[in-house]
Amino acid sequence: MLPLLENLPRTQDDWNRWSWSHRDSHDRIRAAIKSKHGVDLSDYQTDPIDPGAINDFLQNNSQLHGDMNGVLGLQSADLQDVDISDDRQFEAWVRLHYQEHLYAELKLEI
Image 1 (cartoon, one colour):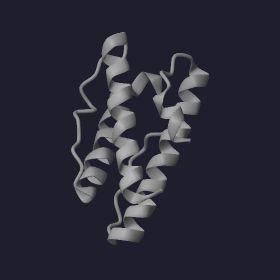
Image 2 (cartoon, one colour):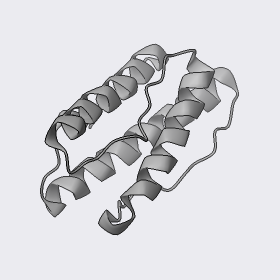
Image 3 (tube, rainbow, N blue to C red):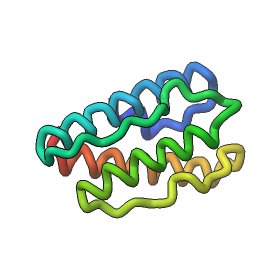
């Protein structure tokens, strides 16, 4: 599932697959943090992604990343400040976002 987060979602079908994979990764990360660190992180709604409320998704996602990276001692990028209609910003965001998921999953050995 994690490799799907490297893809740039363009169509609604792409977004649906990306969003589901994203949710799956966060669910596994939260479960592993609870199991290995005894911390029960809050869950924030990130799936499905409402195209009309992308800022809500970005805020909720940013909170998820801040929480997980705080427990894991990992560096976190600003994943809330992006204009997804700007291809360069969006591509950079997808790369940074994927890397945070990758590092968390590697550190948790999931």
